[in-house]
Figure 1: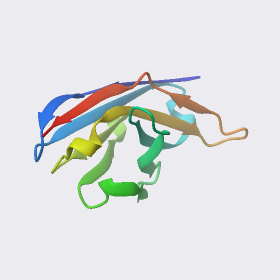
Figure 2 (figure 1 turned 180 degrees about the horizontal axis):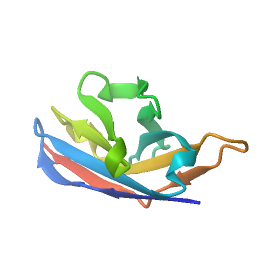
Figure 3 (figure 1 turned 120 degrees about the horizontal axis):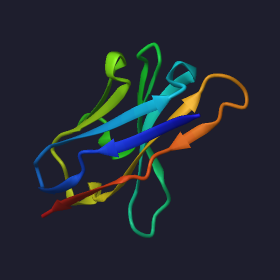
Figure 4 (figure 1 turned 45 degrees about the vertical axis):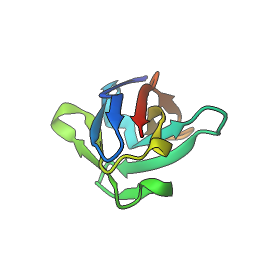
Length: 118
């Protein structure tokens, strides 16, 4: 069992920055990868970025070049640094943790709202 809790969302003006945090607890040594997803109103949830236990990263969508995912293993925390934010980045941002062993269960957090004003 793994729990993930997001924090760091809020309201920011276009061009600004935010750093989201995702803290994992529970069976953290079973985690293979953690990721950030976002879901805007009326849209499907989409991958923003992910990072594996060995530090390999993957970015998707319009956040490439503006967002950076990182992890602090000692704190069991993954961060998403978001720069040059745009109004279209407005969404609920969710963190997840994928376990390494079959059936590779995925645990989700409750999400944190990010609102970018123009």
